[in-house]
Image 1 (cartoon, rainbow, N blue to C red):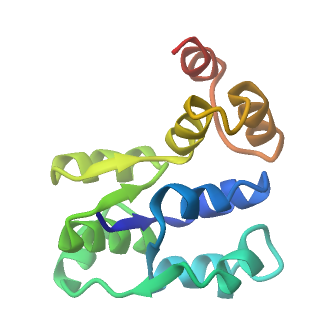
Image 2 (image 1 turned 120 degrees about the vertical axis):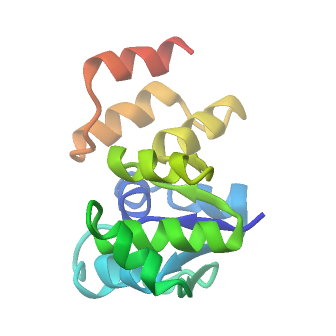
Length: 155
């Protein structure tokens, strides 16, 4: 299965030194050009920039349906729109954190997960302590309400 990522999961996982989990679980990750621009070009010198630029297993891809991208840009940013359209075209799993983006992806019938989903997967395999990983995410500025934090840890 093809896996497509938006920028936030790449940045968040890089900030806590867990970007390699994407490769470990999914092999190759596809990102649209706009996501590459957000993370690497416009995000140079920020968390994730150097990592994403140097990872051979992160492949830049372009969504073909530009009209669909533009339609989604009415309510989403361009990176999210491109990631959603690319995931739809590749019939792949979309890794996305933004609530509005997740809602749009679900409405299109896409399979989705996010940064937390990747960490839960790794925790279930004994590769990390979920509480520590969530605490690290919160420390680096990842938005996670206390209610959601408690819900995730109770799973």
